[in-house]
Amino acid sequence: MNNKLLNLAIGLLISGFAIGTTGCKEDTIIKAGITPASDNIFSNAIGDTLTIIAKTIEDDSIATGFTPTTTNIIHGAGVTNDAFFGRTNWGIYMQVIPTASNLTLPATPDSAVLILPYAGFSWGDTINKNATLEYSVYRVTENLSRDTLYYSKDKKSIDYANPVSDPVIVNLYSLKYDSIKVAGSKRKQHLRIKLKGSFLNELVTAAKNANNNGDFLNSIKGLYIAARDTNNNTCKVIPYFFLSGSGDYSRASVALYYNENGNTNPDNISTSFLNFTTADCAHFNYISRKYDGYPAYPFVKRTTTQTSDSIILLQNEPGAALDIRIPYIKNLPTAIINKAQLVITKVSVAGDPDAETMFEPNRIFPVGVDATGKAYAILDLANASDNTAAFDFVDGVRQSVTINGVTISQWRLNIPREVQKAITNKVDALHLRINGTVTYPGAYRLIAGGKHSKYSIRLNITYTQAN
Image (tube, rainbow, N blue to C red):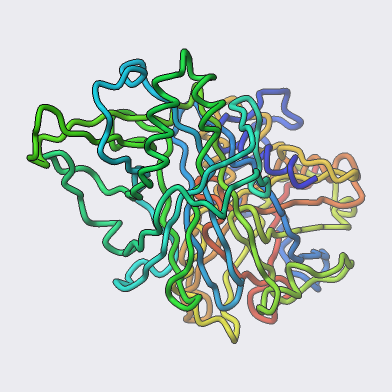
């Protein structure tokens, strides 16, 4: 079930929404911020007339080997330690291939450096100038396939005993801001990991002997980039990197540096590249969560019950997701639903010192779950003739609101068509799953009110009674 949900999320956010036949007329839905004065208002929170069962479930995997056609591939590499949610590790599996000019190298390179361009985004304590991680590169010993869709929980065989790089300690604050001078020119921010000379020789031999990309990948099956926390397990920031891109130092690659004709000027050093390419190379972001021993554990790992929790948890997949059930939706009056807005509010809890640094998602999105546990696109998204307009209508963008003099983050999801369908079809329960976006896998986290004393999740409905 989880993989289906995650594939659906990717389809909604990257590939667009399916076009179909609407289940209710467009003119029966009004903008969420408008309420006709003559309409009946049905608005309540958990524990009142309309029951809402809200809890946390674990979506344990997401398809991170997906290759989008319109955006660059972004993967995280590192580790974070969240005092409430626990520990998360990110590792990158990737391949590189020689370009045509590399197949016959003009000289034996002097050094090889793995390059991961910084994607311009880090999540967590981004203002800590002393945060560091130790990065290493390992050889993948199992075949990878460009045509296989890999997930965040997949693992491939890795030769951990013989790393192909020496470890390099990286200041994560400097990584975001400092350009790097390479071969006489300033380059955009990127992670550089020097590879060992023995592995350099293997790369050169494989490239010279390869008649095609398949030959090369039979010899150099792939690389795995992993990080170790050098801060006594206190690192609270994760950087993200581009794999795809256009031009040198803008895409993941192995740069081969060599001097020709007795040149000793580092500004005139020659360079060749083994590049990651979307057409030929496999990739995926391995992500693991550890909740054991942390406050989030009993919420994420709880057994399924028909009761609500006071708080509910969300992370960008894989990880915690909001599970929302409205069991008596069929008892609402058969009427024209003008507005149905699910309201989710951030709450503060004791024992969460990282609440401000490990910040919440800017946007969340809903998918439906049917009686068999199969995911589907809710009607407000699935039957849209304009994908962008549909997503804007559903909204789910974080906004600041003031409640009883307190400014707090809130998310509002407009789902009138889905509610209309549920009432019309007399379904036993409207079942929704709420996730973060897939752009930065494993990032963000949110603690929201479930059956909360002040900030309960609620469904506000405005309807027009039929004559």
